[in-house]
Length: 475
Image (tube, rainbow, N blue to C red; front, top):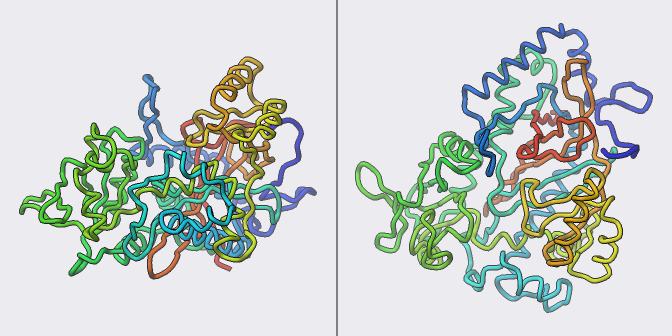
């Protein structure tokens, strides 16, 4: 939060009494010895360090591998709140998949004038190579992470859609595992919906999306850029949890029209490749010729129905931040319904009137790169210095179409444990969604990211944020 804007406290009512979802937790917390809880917090940190749950920080020579801070106070969501959120998430995910199919086929939404043609035609996330391509099962986005913020009891906003290679699910799973290990008695007291079955559901969902060429139980592999990638821990973790092979580009080759992986018994064909490599690096024969991370010829195999790539190439056009600003129209166009979950109001700096407004109000807005992620390349106006605002103003003048701007929302807070006791901090939420021809599965909860610095709105781990376990009550 910045300034004196009021914010919604998810645990406490204005009169200081406890909101219903937190009542049993607070009753338990009040009976705990403070020194025991501090010891448990240190134990949790040591557990994360021993397990190797770190993330890489690019450009940071002093600490290229960092531990993501973990707070032991859970973020608690009632079953009623989650039911509404789930309906909104499912509606949005269906619309995204329909949009992707349309944009790579008949482009009805462009013909109808609901989205400007140049927003697609000039967008680097749009892949002409996918035009007319039908992915196996008709699924483009097998795994989606939807970033959600809250500003009131029933006010939830989608901050952004992550439809390319969303990360963070391993932290969601390890956060829960850690809490179960540290406080088993708490889970006997409070009925919390399970998340540990995510890897099993992920494997089942990917298997259901197998290509035509698959003749038996689907062979699934996870493609990683390698150990130097910031999310490598997650790649290896998910492969292990799913019982899938973890492979790099040099482990794969095209043999007899199939993508095959090297094993001790020779090469074995892969049916489904859960790739954590960006589009540009996927196939040096189709995209970047200098890529050593992908598989030469994989796009030919894909077009011929010889492999499923999850997520499909070209899905980035649906989570581009300029496209994001049209999501209410996209949802209505493909579902015939008003969006259940609202967008954050967004100014497109490519439009002259919007740019003029943003330039005048930089000190009170959040400005983001259209293709940016991880909290990099953005300006949080209320927290920026005059010098930073002036520098960003020049960036906007030089490339206005590269940015969108949004108001500084008064994000909700949940408690974290400090030396002085519980204290409110701002949070967001990334629920994870699995999509297959068999349906849509939304994991109850997701990854809660928390801004550990008092007053900060930036929750990204790369920018000093932490995580906490997300509970959806089994009511």
